[in-house]
Image (cartoon, rainbow, N blue to C red; front, top):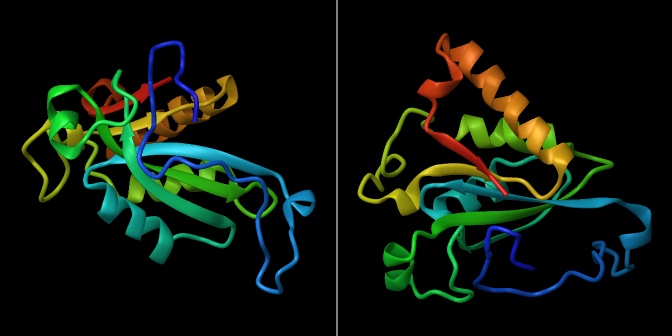
Length: 166
């Protein structure tokens, strides 16, 4: 993955996906349109499991890593000092699942009021919730999902501790 203009880097298990292999072994990249979502939801292993086990049809792959900091491949301990978020990268087939549906799973699996962590990992901003957008469309959809979440919870958007970042 490439750093954004803000220096956001997603690292750990970095590799490129050229195509998606279907269960019968045929390459199906030409039959689908893929998109990537980068989401910080607390512990990345827990977040990864949320999408792999409770996800929906169309989630192709989920990887754990660090994002939001300046160092390309931080260690676990460096990530605490370097303002990285623990995050997941979700690759999905847009012919089967939308970014909005991915965001719905995100909101179902975070505590949007938590500060300095999520659930059991209430010890560091590295575990805060955030949505990292990769396009203007994703940014708009992320902002709309945050507004909808606030309305559903009966609070104003500023009460939700979920960042939307490039």
